[in-house]
Image (tube, rainbow, N blue to C red):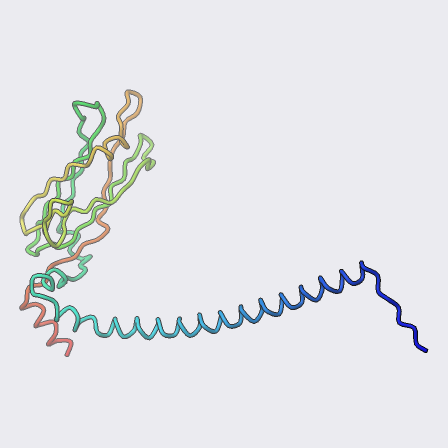
Length: 203
């Protein structure tokens, strides 16, 4: 007769824990593999959707109301930056005694600037930047919420920085600071005749 030995409680506990762990690992692996499959499928769909959206973008712009589509008909024109004169001054603020940056931007060309962003950097006496930010000088439309509108040929636009910028360039007796500017974005509005000519050349 065969005598079966009973396993000790410690052995039973070890086998039980090991079995539960193995089942958990197998389940987790299955979930991960299923998730990777779903992500791969969704990513392929997103790529297809993005490609279709980009291809249909001109049609979408043409289908917009004229007042809206006019704003979107511009082009990036880095070559036009040489026709934009940007001057920055640091003016003492009478109430706080700090320095307030003021921009004077002149459009010396014959194009309408629909978007113009100027990067302003504040330098200490060793010409080391201590503060920087981007100031949007021209926008497609003019609103009271910081949209200053397009910059027309021959016009000069004065931009007084906010109090926040004034605090960042506070003046002190022992420190002298200067400011430097850089045009970081410039776009020109395209009149309807230019758009038609561009479409004919492309087609």
